[in-house]
Image (cartoon, rainbow, N blue to C red):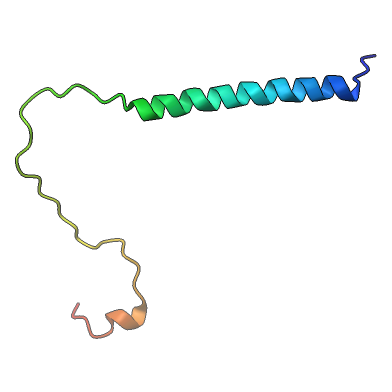
Length: 68
């Protein structure tokens, strides 16, 4: 049977915590690095964006006077 002392549990918890912190730092560094793709082609001079409003929640009372 394995018997764990409070000190051994504490050491293990600290080691696991350090490992988690190191992995978090590695992910943060990757995010900060901003590994962007290489541009291939001419830049876009004009970008058109359309918003049609579908999916916007409305109340029934807001549509009463609207023509079908």
